[in-house]
Amino acid sequence: MGQVNDPNTPSAQETDLGDPLAAFAALRTEEGRALLDEVRDVEPAQELAAATRLRRTYPAPLVSAALAQARLRRRAAAKFGAEDAARMFFTPNGVEQSTRASVAAHRAESFKALGVRSLADLCCGIGGDAIALARAGISVLAVDRDPLTCAAARANAEALGLADLIEVREADVTEVDTGAYDAVFVDPARRGGRGRIFDPEAYSPPLSWAVGAALRAPLAALKIAPGIPHEAIPAEAGAEWISDGGDVKEAVLWFGTDTPASHRATLLPGGASLWTSLAAMLPDPEARPVGRYLYEPDGAVIRAHLVAEVAARVEGGLIDETIAYVTSDALHDTPYATAYEITDQLPFNVKKLKALLRERGVGILTVKKRGSAVEPEELRRKVKPQGKNAATVFLTRVAGAPTMLIGHPAAPRPA
Image 1: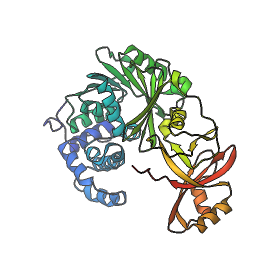
Image 2: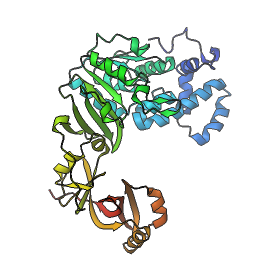
Image 3: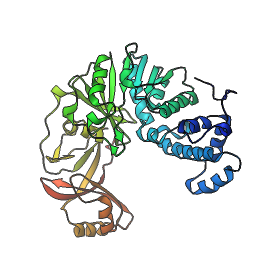
Image 4: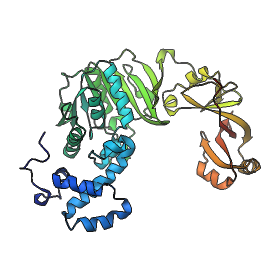
């Protein structure tokens, strides 16, 4: 990789900054880095004044590029952490489509535990997964066909001191020979000009090609959308759904492991993992009357179709055969669901709910829904909670009927 401050590299003043690649390269010159430092803490409301001031010293296109990069870094902090994001380089699509650092680190550790020492990262984007893999000690070939994306990936490998472990190659992933690598990771683009792509064959490259590439490798992982139809999952793959902080982030198909034809739900940051083979999956639990406790399974558990396994662990059943809420008369500690103690069960009626909340002085109201068309904020506006007490209301169905369940997070059992 070329040196950033090579004396033969044109300065920002000498470069045509109308070209995105040239503008990006200018940000990596000594002049560009100085400007990035100056705009690091510029808030959106301050951008116009800052741009006016900085254009007296720097080329106007470079100022615009730096301010845009600063905005992207602020957005990226949620995924990469403030420290890394402040040193990295991003494209708008790169921020949107990159893997969250905690999820990428989990996957990298999974590859490492499987003995992987070298890996081809196909459709690498700005290098989020490559960074996590390199930090796990894995040598990475990072491939993408977009020149600007590759430039960002190279810059990020250098900025984080990982250039010795990450080789970035601008190429069509379908034409890259991955035979020399221990494993392959494929992250097809799932967004197009009109937003998210829901048809796996419309991914870029298509899911069928990615599965073929995975099957040809000794070991492989294929990142897919969490909502992929289960019937689209190849029989040779083990499927893992990953949540972070309760939000489902992605699904991954694993090939070449000793757990094919299986489903797994992994919950970060703790790393709890619920697994079963498809052959051993429990049948859907029966519906039963609402008991003292309601369990809200983690989204990864629901996506993996492992609610029955959670119900078995808490000695419970469903509140409705179509709703993924589990009820039980017993309180069990489980990382795979959040437990609530239910105090009231009412047919859906806003006036009755408003009266009950007013009677109990509930001003801190959490509204959750599953199987209801009512929006939580709409309900909050109608009931106008007031008071010092807190409650949680579930808008759902019980035995097919619209129902409100009122309660609060269950206190942990005494040790």
